[in-house]
Image 1 (cartoon, rainbow, N blue to C red):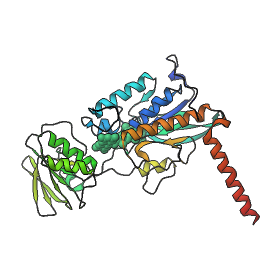
Image 2: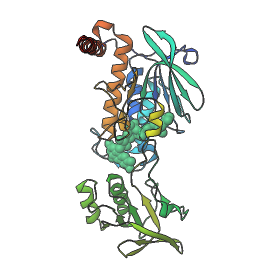
Image 3: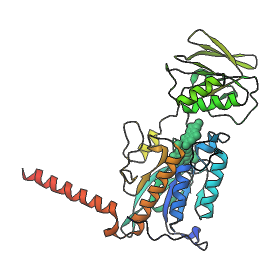
Image 4: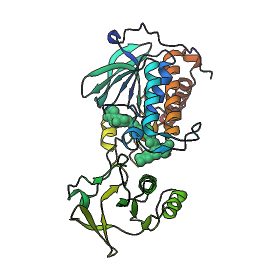
Length: 353
Ligand SMILES: Cc1cc2nc3c(=O)[nH]c(=O)nc-3n(C[C@H](O)[C@H](O)[C@H](O)COP(=O)(O)OP(=O)(O)OC[C@H]3O[C@@H](n4cnc5c(N)ncnc54)[C@H](O)[C@@H]3O)c2cc1C
């Protein structure tokens, strides 16, 4: 169906006096920012709630200095920081409103309705907001899986994200993990003259084959089927005893072994989850709770910026259609209605038997 009624928000809108928001988006990462631009560009009042004190999501908080090379239209790449700043500026220009350092805690249904929509109350650590639709784009919540054996050292040289560009020249760095994030970290350190040992628990790294090749070509050593058995200080360095019997002394350890499941937070929201703890959605990016959509890493198999963007845009357009289109033109409502009729028929046929 055509995406019609495309308007823009007027700068005269008094956002402090709105009785409710058309759309509240949770998370100012790539998915949330793309969704917010799209709803604001269609004249929907849009509020983004972000737990951190600035926008950008993972590209800003986990790899601000990395040059991202897989985004179409950026042949020379773009850093996580620049990408985040540009997308945020675009959202601000579209009159999207932001609340930073505010964390979602619950989404309640209310008795109030607007055009058949039951308003929702989005409850955060600082207050609550009435709205018609919610888009959850809170990613993986950024709780990296930790390694107890290294945490016990309480060293400032153990990192759970790719550290800001430092001077690794001639220094030995241990990178723990075999996925794309770990390999990216290794490549970054190698490109800055560091000497890298990648410690991988599995018998082959699960990250991209060309990244593995890049690490090896650049002189990195990959230790497969290997774990850290013990760690201690060796002067300013950290000495790692591996289960292979080898000992590595490094200036810095970077741990990239995935993220903790966000299951608990999602369970609190009362949305249906997939077996892996991600949020289940329908083809319209809507969750099991009508009017609540989910985009990006919170549900996706393919965790990429461009995918989070595309999903944010699609969910925003479905939310827009729900809000603006009459019943007989809204394919989702028609589909839901058809399903309901079929379900009723099946139930009454079963009763007759
Ligand atoms: C090391 C690393 C390198 C990567 N490199 C690339 C790459 O080169 N190219 C690529 O395409 N992808 C890359 N990715 C993946 C990409 O960053 C993610 O797929 C993308 O950021 C997902 O966007 P998102 O909006 O779904 O979530 P996120 O980026 O995780 O953003 C979610 C936002 O929601 C906020 N939030 C969380 N919980 C709450 C809450 N309760 N209340 C309010 N706000 C909340 C968070 O603070 C965050 O700002 C990489 C990932 C990592 C970890």
